[in-house]
Amino acid sequence: MFKIAICFLLIFSVCEISNAQQNNRRQPDWVRDPYRRYDRQANVAAVGLGSDRQTAERNALGNLISFFGQSIFVEEAVSVIYQETVQSGAAARWSETTAINSNIITTASMENLIGAEIGEVWFDGSRTYYAIAFMNKRNAIQIYSQMLHSNQVIINNLINIPSEQRLTLEAVARYNFAAVIADINASYANLLSLLGDPAHLQRLTRGNEYRLEAQNIIRAIPINITVNDDRESRIQSAFAKVLTGFGFRISANNSRYTLRVNVRLSQINFPNDPNRFVLMELNANLTDSSTGAILLPFSLNNREGHSTAATAENRAFLSAERIIEAEYKELLTSFFSRLLPD
Image (cartoon, rainbow, N blue to C red; front, side):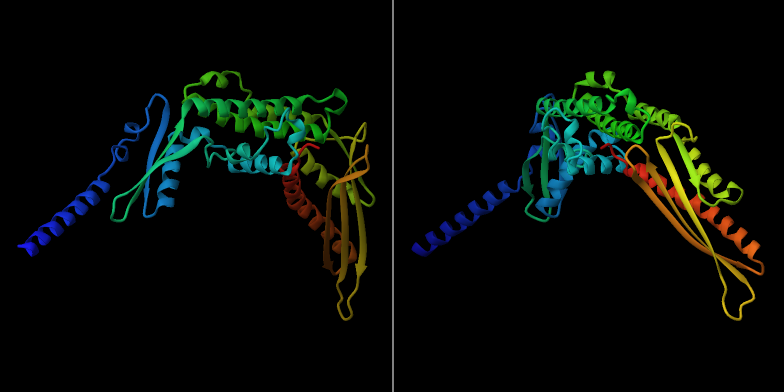
C-alpha cells in the first residue's frame, strides 16, 4: 500500500512539472501583437524572432526601424562623411555644446535608434526565440528634437561666412558639409513626423539648397593656370577643360588659386633601336597663393616613341592630355568628396 502511495505521489509530481513547463512555453500575447504589451498611443513596437536570443533581439530592432520606412535613411556616402567628421572632432568647433557625441554618430545611418529598447524575450521551448522592441514616443521626440537642434546650430555656424572669405574653397567645403548635415536632419525630421511631431519638416532647409550655393561659389572662383613648357597650350587646355567641368572660371586676374604646372621633356635613345623616345615628367600643384599651401598635388610620367622625335613628342603631349582628362578629373572628384572646412 505504501509503495502504491509513493507511485501516485511521483506521478502527481511529474504532472505538476509538466504543467509548469507547458505554462512556461505558453505563447505571450505580444508575440502576435506587440501592442498587447505596449500601448500604441505612447509607443512604437515590433517583434523579431531567431534561432538564438541575440538574433531575435536584432531582428526586433530591425523591424522597429522598418516601421519608419526609407524616409529616415540617408545615402551611405552622406552618412560616412558625417560620421567621420564628427568622430574626428572637426565638427565640435561649430557646435554650441557637447551635443556632438556618439549618440548622434550612431544614428547618422539610422541603423540604430536612440531610445529603442528590448522589452521581453520568450523561448518557445523548441528552437525559436521571440523578442519585442519598443520606443517610447515622448522620449524619442525629445531626444531627436535636441539632436536636430544641435545639428541646425552647426549649419548656421558653417554658413556664417565673412564676405572676404566667401569666394574660397573653404566656403565651398562649409556649404557642402552643411548640406550633409541638412540631409541627416531631414531623416530626423521625418522620424519625428512619424512619431507625431511634424513641425520640424516645415522649417528645414534641404541639403540640395546648400549644394546649389556651393556650386554658385565655385562658379565665381577664378583659377589661374601656369605651365612652364606648353606646346600650343595643350597642357593648359587639358587642365582647363577638367576645371571648368567642375564649374570653375579660368582667369589670371585676382586669382587666389593657381594651378602651377611644370613640364619636363627629355629624349631617350636606346642602342640598336632606330626609334626616338620622349619622356614627359609633369607635376601640377593646385596652390593657395594667400598661404602658399599646396592643396592638391598631381603628377604623371609617360614615354612615347616614333621614328621621328617630333612625332614622339606629339604623342607624349597627346597621351598627357588623355591622362589629365581621366585621372585629374578623378583626383578632383576625390578631393572635393574629402574637402572639409578648416
